[in-house]
Amino acid sequence: MNQPYPPGGGEPFGGRARRAYPAGGQQPDPPNWQPGHPPPYPLGGPQYGAGPSPYPPIWQPTPSGPPQSVQRAVMLMYVGAGLEVLGLIFDLITRKGSVGAGIPGALIGIGLWIWMAMANRAGKSWARITATVFFGIDCLGLLLLLAGVGIVMHAVAPSLKFVLVLAVLAGVLTWVVGLVTIVLLWKRESSEYYAAMQGR
Image: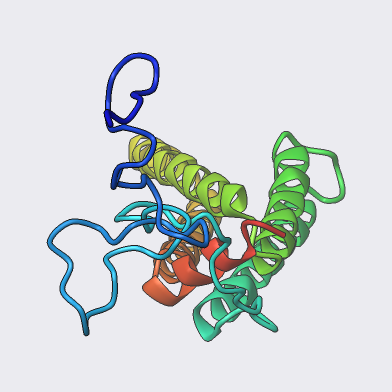
């Protein structure tokens, strides 16, 4: 007796049709899989391959304080502010208390030194870049000061020459403080501190 075939052909209803899935609803073994070895992927789908992990990275604690390089740079910034204060006092003495053009600039310089010290101690990346820009401006100012003093040095009175020499020495000292500060801010340990504090 011929067995009936389902509509569309195929194995008869009573034949040994190969099931798509074994009994129990589990997936069939992957091709080329040998017993005794773990399957290439767990049940339920293939395993994630190479690529970014869907889980967040391991949490890393933020540093408790700035490293030595940043601390020294901040200390030098306060030294720079102190030099600006001394320059302001000297300017007031030489001008006998009259308000000169250099006094507002000195006040601005004091505020910038203190502002940069506080911002860099807090690990603000923009503060390090801003301090570097300010140092570049200071380099240009020192060059202009040296050029101006060299031009007028032979045409001024001996008493004024002494003042000009002190101004040049103060400018060079401030420039050296700024140079060492920038070098400390861009050291490797400083960069790691800024990177760790960036997300805060």
